[in-house]
Amino acid sequence: YSLCIKPILRFSKPQSLINRVSLSQSCPYYKTTGFKYLLKDFYVVLPVIYSVICAVGLTGNTAVIYVILKAPKMKTVTNMFILNLAIADDLFTLVLPINIAEHLLHYWPFGEVLCKLILSIDHYNIFSSIYFLTVMSVDRYLVVLSTVRSKRMPHRTYRAAKIVSLCVWVLVILIVMPFTVFAGVYTVPDYMERKSCALSFPSPESFWFKASRIYTLILGFAIPVSTICILYTMMLYKLRNMRLNSNAKALDKAKKKVTVMVFIVLAVCLFCWTPFHLSTIVALTTDLRTTPLVIGISYFITSLSYANSCLNPFLYAFLDDSFRKAFNYGFCYPLALRGGMNTWKNQCENVKKDMSYSCRHS
Image (cartoon, rainbow, N blue to C red; front, side, top):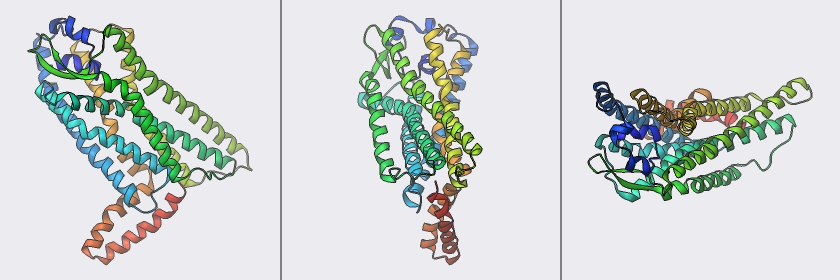
């Protein structure tokens, strides 16, 4: 049952669907040989995919958090937002093993409180990434604007970035609160009375289910993505005018690199999450039959959205020199101090000096 229904709805299973639709009705292919093989494939492949995402994401994002907190000259405004983005991704990858356990056990053994916590963190993952990227896009626009006008930004400080980040967390918690309220453990009829963790809506369930999907689509995709598109359109317009105006000061190399990095991180996020939100539109506007192809596509979409949580550290390492140098400094310097190796110490000090310029101008 979970393999048939869960990928289609991901986090939401309206009670009416569970109570009024039998497994044979919701999964008309469940008795076929091909469907049985599909179930076996998913049972093996999905835990492997989720485990890889968990291991890579947890390692990469923890390294990002460590480097920003420990490495010198990394306490910049942009890096504060990256730090919070890494914390959000780390939080999500920490709960993936519980999702893997539920998948392997075919039921929810962890109780009501943990169910609410896990579903809340799942939804934090939907909103937090795009909201922090929206804030980073606003910051990049203000940087470009101030450079074009040759003005300084006295209020763009590390402390201000902390306050903005805290506000984003509070906003995301408020947005996710309704999902926390509706999350719960229920018994699945027609399937050996097994327990499952999902959103349990009041009557009329179909209305609440559609409302929850529209709510997620608007607040988690339409509004932030529209804001980002407007900001980058205005940014490109300003940059185009700046090239035409010889009196305007050009963006320096470090600022350009940071802006490009933020744009690529944003593009990867949209690549990973757009299919999920498009599937919401399809679910709301069409009546899809639960075929093996639909189930396979649904699990691919879910895995793609999960994968976004482990990609960002690689983007930072490849696209930002200061992050590369900070990774080197953050991990080689403690080893050098413990090992007493003068050569390593000298190399780390050189890395430290190299970091000062690129971080100072981001």
